[in-house]
Amino acid sequence: MICENLGVNSLGHLTFGGMDTVELAEKYGTPLYLMDENRIRHNCRTYINAIRKYFGENAGCLYASKACSFKRLYEIVREEGFGTDVVSSGEVYTALKAGFDLKNAFFHSNNKTDEDIAFAIDNGIGYFVCDNLEEVMAISETAAEKNVTQNILLRLTPGIDPHTYEAVNTGKVDSKFGSAIETGQAFEITKTALSLKNIRLCGFHCHVGSQIFDSEIYIRSSEIMLEFIARVKAELGFEAEILDLGGGYGVRYIDSNPYIDIDKNICELADFMKKTVAQLNIKMPRIYLEPGRSIVADAGMTLYTAGTVKKIPGYKNYVSIDGGMADNPRYALYGSYYSVRSATRPEAPCDMVCTLAGRCCESGDLIQENIRLPHDIKRGEKIAVLTTGAYNYSMSSNYNRLGKPPVVMINDGKDYVAVKRETLDDIIRNDI
Ligand SMILES: *Cc1c(COP(=O)(O)O)cnc(C)c1O
Image 1 (spheres, protein in one colour):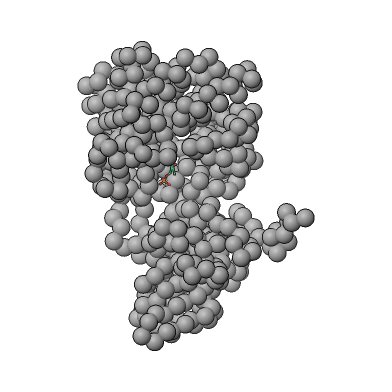
Image 2: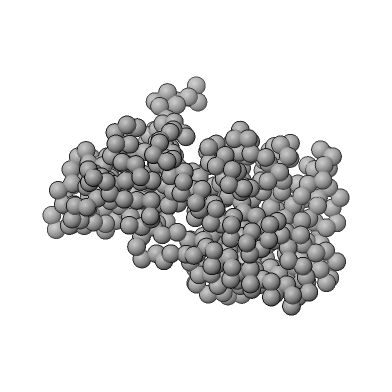
């Protein structure tokens, strides 16, 4: 199967983290997000062990919490020695309420509001990762008003298009994120940041994309960033302490997606960077990586109950479920792939090509097209959509006034609720 935390038990039911998914669906109802705590911890350890082994003890990992954000998750990643990325006051607040030390939090986004900036500074945010010059100025002003010196990194655009699967110098300079090195804006913003009294520039950041399988992308972007650091050292006399290389490692949604050996990737990256800093005559900055998807994706699964099975002879078969784009908008948004199984009968022959359709009033509300399920699937059968731990719960909505599903955690044969199911009263709680 797509991930080693999946299995089949003696009842013939699909298991996840060793637990019977049909039993869990009956206990908690559907739609249901399941998360395997051990898998989250395993994924965290893979990163943290590798980054410390190859880049030294002061290198670190930040969990990009936009991938999946709720209190318990911040506790788990903190326990695993991670810092975190946040992108809104909502994420800052959630992390804070989880007891996360915000000194280890990095505030991203291409457009932080004045309220975000003030709120994050008031709560002792460790670093802002500044996207552009206006933002540096806004943070500088707020820091001056509050009489603090604020640590920042600058987000730069190294000019790499990860989806051509090759390093090119021009692509992605037009991104909405960051300041481009190629246009000279990165150098200008660095000069300005260094001149501001209430700002302490600590280094640079880049994030070239997501669901990346080609390790060459990281090598190439690290090279461009290190060359920039060397130039800034030579021309401005400032040597960056921190280099944050972003997240983006790909995960396996379907069988044709390759495995990524994170340890090997980080090892090769470190080898390359050690050689490069020596050639450029700069010191190795403190390195951060910011995985999101690859921490939580395969630690998640969504369980649904099948409803209508509609066969349109000569056309298409639809299996409709009791969730949809409200709990997983990713296929509707950008055609993401997922693997789908009957949780009730994962070993039954999958002899019917069909589309898994959501219940929302929107033709585009599909979870996946051209998948295979048993031809005699019927109302009431439990269906599992795999690898939904990233960008599902965090992107969920109340479209059609559907309540958000609960998040149930699995840990060593036990299950517990980390996020409650939204009730009908939750749906109207802000209606006057
Ligand atoms: C989204 C994002 C990440 C995480 O990306 P994944 O593909 O989920 O690993 C890391 N850093 C930044 C700045 C991001 O925007």
